[in-house]
Length: 199
Image (cartoon, rainbow, N blue to C red; front, side, top):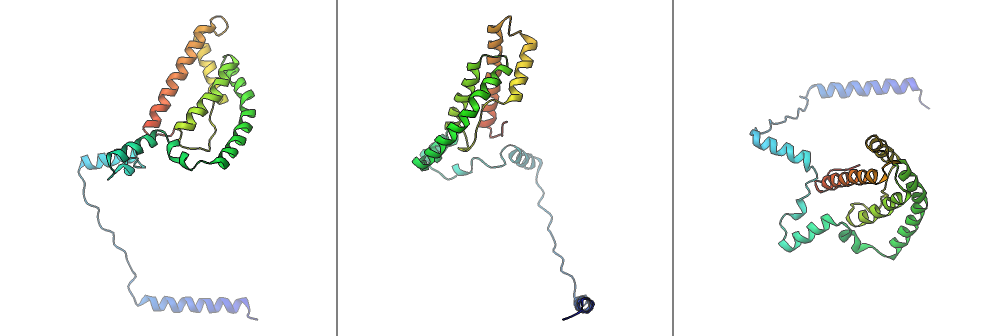
């Protein structure tokens, strides 16, 4: 059985031998070449491309026939056409159970969110059923739950209440709420077309 002090001495001797043997050689230095100089236009174009299209969404369209480009374009707008081919009864059964579980939570929750926004309960139910159906066809992920959230409902109700009193003028208040949510949806759809992540 060797003593720890003996092991330290052996390690130091090995280090000094390897150091003395390597001192006779030049250390390896990897030289990096200077990148080629680009003009301002190319540099600006590269920066814009990296900022707005970092994932290069048009790459699958290169060297494709017109009919294939059309099909890829439709699949980009409606991703369900891509993953829907592999959808089967087993996946549907799992999705049905998940949907019923989430619905049991979302129905009372979304009624409460409608009240936070000073709207009738049925608008909370609309917002819990319609957006997921649209997202199922046009969304990029099959495994996501979407719908209203408490912060946005509270913010919408507070801001709109500053403009129109929901108790004295409920029709105008509802119109203003629909207008605000319509333009929020247009903004999110536009950001989706330009492939930006939306909240």
